Length: 391
Image: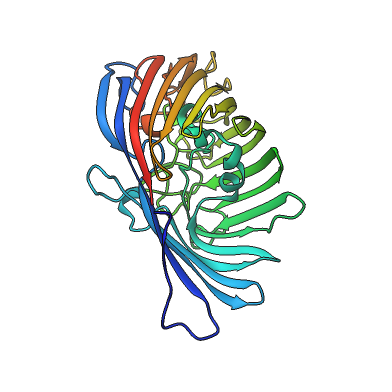
């Protein structure tokens, strides 16, 4: 079912209103080797589990619009994330934790929205990014895997002009006496024309705790804690600010073959109350090849490499090499079965939970749904088999 459209019968005669119900149900089996907890480098064990949303998070939502005339319309979208295993809400139990926005959209002038949403950094880079075919980057350090949902955000997305689309956003932290504390801002530019596309974006998150320290609940990039926290960044979780710059690009050689490449630079910037003193920088490069041999089959192979910098007492910088394969078979237009295989090898050193002075061996963290239980060693294998239905 592509969607359920409901026409509002009580609307004024001049308005055309519509509401669409949509959703995704995704469930599967997941295995990972040497599963442990953040900051641990011993005691890892094999982990087997049934998990929801392995290809893409399970969700249901409502979106609609009202035609105001002259090419202008009011829009809204409410999207709930949930676990199909238990029925529990995701994003810390928020009713509409994925998206909750209202705004105005014009064919001529673009779209302005307010509420909880993704950033232009993600929305304009994702079409050529790693998450499309489960080719996540180590620890999702660059936030290109839909992990950041931003509260209190004003966002503008331009119409497409000569292949270009521009986006900008600013989220107010709401901290008395400060416009900067807890705020998040982003800007991005996308060019999409024929077989070629490219996106460039910037994204900054400010901790609402003054001078850094324990991640503040007033931070606009907040979902029951700090987003995108992994074994790569665990020692830097008291940062005063995080900033991400990324470029993603894709080229479609034919209906059966396309290629995507990406680069990102991520910085965890300390404040006077952070548990470390020097900015931690992560550079990541990725490549994936997607091949569609038949109408039903999609096959993907990807590689990503992340390198951290020497800082905060680290003499041997952390490095992460990750390889993955993805296979998907469409049973219908709405239902597919899929499989995913990944291997990551880490080397060098990183900071443990206590920050500076707590130098430990870097441990593997494949990212996405493996992120909450990273490896206790330098290697990790992840396997997924699942089914997804879209309605």
